[in-house]
Picture 1 (cartoon, rainbow, N blue to C red):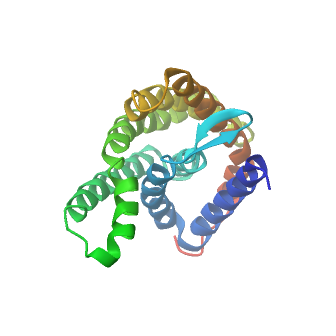
Picture 2: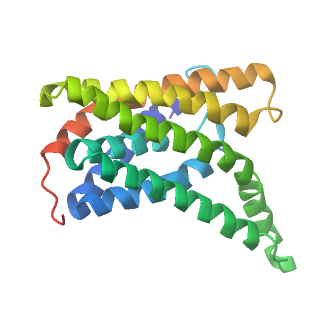
Length: 227
């Protein structure tokens, strides 16, 4: 199966899971998804793949789902709850970085070196990636929730939710990409690949924003089992 087919399947699975999380747990499910997603996205982004003939990083779908979650919170529960979700994601990522950096300081026994090296391969990159992510995350997510409200003030119709969703996300994701990618990867990859990553990261995020639109309409109509 090609990377592109896996990617579309992966996106579908992410969106189905966030719908289920909201259906069963309501706002709490969205907060939990954002906490989990900020960590998983920063682990996935370490892996580079070829998508649509370009070099790209994983994590873009998960990052995109975070914007979906905050947009839904903004739409149904207001700006205060959306901002709360952003700060939860920020704290979760920061706590993960601190905890794992201390965990890596322990010396593993000889029989466990392979696992220890695997953890170091992932989490020794995380501080730099997390720095880029934390800065980009706070700026872009807060921008997203404010832009969503500004657009909603002018275009309040439920039928125009797609404009609020895609409009706020497309601008905030551009800012996110332009901040995150250089901090995380400048000097680690050739400049040509760096620009590939910037281009594909943003384009993929736009595709994710378009793909998640039917799901935000669906979730707006859902009455969670646990509110």
